[in-house]
Image (cartoon, one colour):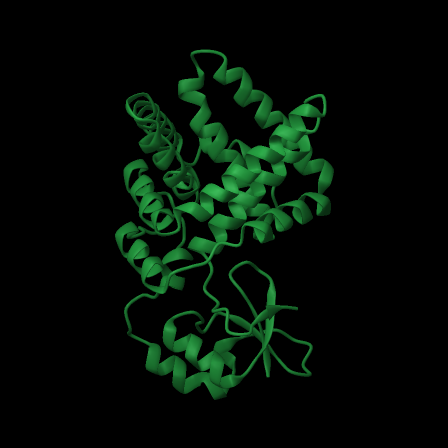
Length: 288
């Protein structure tokens, strides 16, 4: 039996050798995946285990799997259409309460840094939104905040400077993504309420995809729309519940929003991770 480190940096198991070979064949594990055999203390790359050499060799030369696409280095080009097809083919489930619970747990684990960074960014977003510069600054500010949360979720070192990464990593694309999506959603609401609501939810992951995968704004919007569209109601439910939670924060003399907003935004980024970066099947596999 083995334990394995998933794309979310959490440990999963126990898993049999047969199941791991199946993951290799499906592209959900590769030679660099870290695993630990039962009774051992050391974590090693999967390629160092001779019992999986044949499965890895058989997989060599096969088309890039979903795991490779979503884990691509930021400088590597990402085929958004291929990734959308891969995700829609294998499908996904979105656990709303799990996302919110993990968001709350992450906030508790690093409370003051997260609250502090979030408060600064939210105040800047409010100030920008109240002026004409909001058109230019909102996308990069929000994209940077998403980037900060993603680094926290992935167990990486996240600092205040990461929250401003939207101005250095993908400023123009974040600006265009925010501007175009806002204009089209507003137009949809004006013409007929339902299309505006649909697009607002469907494009929820456009900015994270831009800053995380360095996609141009339109491919990111299309990828978000196609993937969310399959389970649109699930994400709508998460957004609706998040809105209600944030309303409670407002009722608490507005101070509560400095806690509820980070929780709900972290929940959204956990949903993003579950949909776009999850490479482990759910076959009786649980975090340990």
